[in-house]
Structures are given as structure tokens and as C-alpha cells.
Amino acid sequence: MNAKFLKTTLLAVLGAMSLSAATPSLDPETGLVIAHGFDEVKTNCTACHSAKFITLQRGDRETWLGMIRWMQKTQGLWEFDATLENTILDYLSEHYAAGQASRRPHLKPSLLPVNPYE
Image (tube, rainbow, N blue to C red; front, side, top):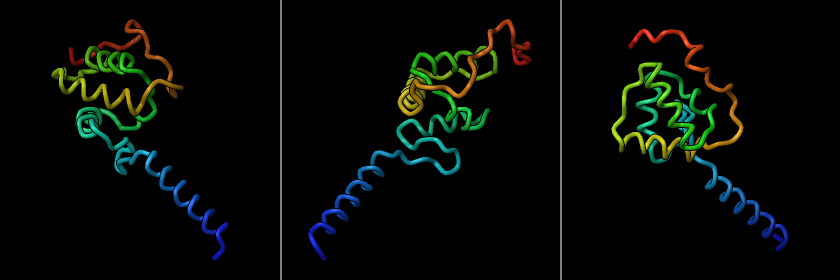
């Protein structure tokens, strides 16, 4: 083999290795990024809705906290202890950070139906 071929092959292999190292692993069941906080998010968030609801969202920590508070106030989501809430917010704000959201903004509370769980 010639040196040019070996160099090209080596660069291609190294490039593929670095790309795969940068690409996070996804849970085949939910499509969520497998990282610290994944189990907590899967357990608590997908108990009520599809993981697709999470993967289609984007937001900073404050946005995610707002969504959690909205669900707690209007959708019957239970309260989290501080450690669990921080783990969930760390995970969501790192792996589903602010950017282009694929969803409309939340409706104003005055436009929502009455919560039957209150």
C-alpha cells in the first residue's frame, strides 16, 4: 500500500472515531440522550407523556423550570425534592438546550380548561 492511501485511511478512521465520540448515545426506547440524569427524566417525565415531548423541546434551565412549574400547576405533576429537580433540570438544559423550538409557546392560563385534579 502506498503512503497516501494509508494516510487517507487513517484520517478517515480518526475522523469517524471523533465524530462517534461527540455524538451522544440515545436510548432506543425513548430517543433520549443517555447521560447523567437520564434515568430520573425517563422515570418522572415519561410517566405522563411521551419522550417525544421532551426531544422536541428546547430551552434553558429557566424555560425547563417554567415547563415543570406549569405542569405542576395545571397538569397534576407531583413536586420534586430539590436534588431530583436539579438533576432533571441539569439534564434537560444540557441535552435539550435553548435553540429553535419546534413547538408553539405555552397557552396563557386563562385559555386553559379547568384542571380536574385540583
